[in-house]
Amino acid sequence: MIKRFFDIIFSLFSLLFFFWVVCIAWLLAAIDTHTSGIFIQARIGQFGNTFKIYKLRTIQFAPSPESARISKIGKLLRDYKLDELPQLFNVLKGEMSIVGPRPDLPGYYDLLEGENRKILELKPGLTSPAALKYSNEEQLLEKQELPLLYNNNSIFPDKVRLNLVYYYHRSFWGDMVIILKTVCYTFFRKK
Image 1 (cartoon, rainbow, N blue to C red):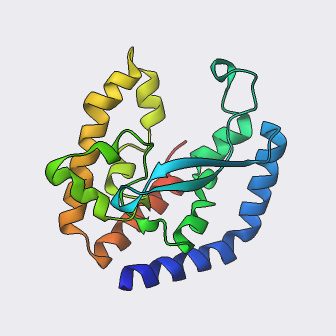
Image 2 (image 1 turned 60 degrees about the vertical axis):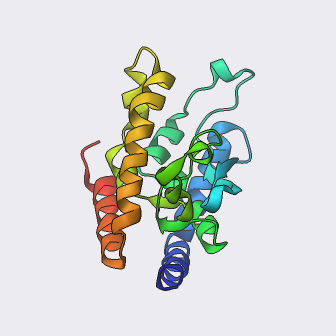
């Protein structure tokens, strides 16, 4: 109950404080990608239920998926996690939390078995220890000869392990530390 109350207050405050940033970023994303500027995708949420996640679009419209590229503005939005700000609406709707396992595409968390399924008891979050550890996941995968295989055999199992540790040791103050680390990493790291 405290976590949900915190999520509502935090997301409302963030949306009020950063509303102008969201509007400007959305407008830039729409112009830069030649789309509506909003990206909506099915993700796996709490208890394995599917929900639609909101993000700012960072990939330019292309006739084929192979020719799609991250736009210049999209790179900036991703670097500062501004493309994730619309997920505050997911938090307000109760589909997500501020801290929790990052929501993944179908075919990953929904297929977990045994003790690992405990992760599905948690609402997915904007940030988590696994998200912090793998904040450079795109660059890491770009260096791999077989990125999907590397993700499935190395990164995803480690994320599951980290999310299970979070499940067993989560607390309000632990969440505050994760939020602080996320803010520091996002805005104060060297680009």
